[in-house]
Length: 93
Image 1 (cartoon, rainbow, N blue to C red):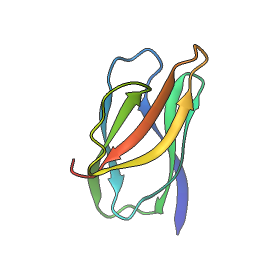
Image 2: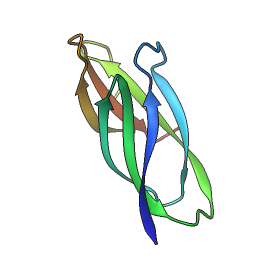
Image 3: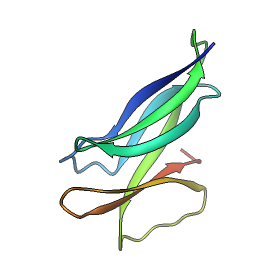
């Protein structure tokens, strides 16, 4: 059986621009969005969970340099302060 779960990626005032999240193998990212000052992703996966893998996510601001090789764009979020963040999954880890 599949279920949708919410995972935190980037907290509001955090200066981290990279984060690793353990997700079940085969997990499908459905949606990524800023919610109450934190970037979350909603992910669908099987339960019970059998195996997990570490997946890597990165946040880039508009105007920042980015090497998009082996990165998959997931979402663009606009903060209440007007900053625009672009969320990518780093497929190389």
